[in-house]
Image (tube, rainbow, N blue to C red; front, top):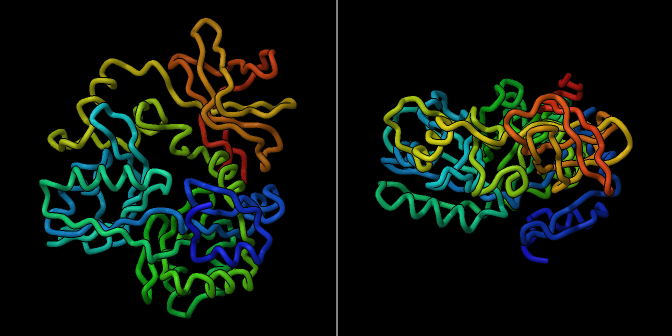
Length: 367
């Protein structure tokens, strides 16, 4: 076991099953992954995501630097606190990582400040890549390891958090718009998440995390582990880095084409040339959703067979607690229609091919 978050003692006290996750000792569940999943869909659950890497980008050329570094365009951020989802690409157009970036100052001011949140498993290569790309810009990169991060998700998440915080923070949360964050008394509170539900992601000093965690427990928020986080994000059709995308996969092949800001045409971000060449040529593979309503569980790396077109592979798969049957994300031939087969235990099982997401706000959304 490696690194521990500021909430490690709280996880132990709650009886969490702790596992190694990218060098961090993290809770997989607190007794029942399915119950935790359902708490988030029906009420409110919370996750310790303090293992995520937070990097502040500041300086006279912070905006120019991020417009070069990211495939999506931070110039579209016209409001303080507004968030942007993006991929960070290599020269071949493969995904180094996916991330969220927040504009922390008023737009179009000198010395802009942005906060970038990247995956913990890719921390070292991300920081190295970001530093290499920063060489020709007047910019400073400052990691924030002293900040803890708690995600509270579910239809009652904001209401429960409002009960657990100061009056001024509660008022701010009640007015916060989706995909926007705001500073409040030393905390950064954003209405973002990775579950397909409404909720908040809160960055706060490590020495305040344990007290806040207890206040959330007292307000009726259920502690949830990484197991439920994975089934929730899969139902929501959200990619997992290293499974659904990596450095060999273009955003065009990972269902992330919407994150590529190709206008204006003169913005030269890393990987642009490769992405445009692939788009002009046409992709041979695409990411789709699979649904198996009969018995069985779809798993990563199972082979997908598409009649007359060839083969693909499941990238993420699991039983869906909300739907009651198995779902998956898979990379398949680009011309794949609405049906395919998956090789399971030596036989081919028919599956429905759908467009993710599978669940939004607790309800089935595909047809």
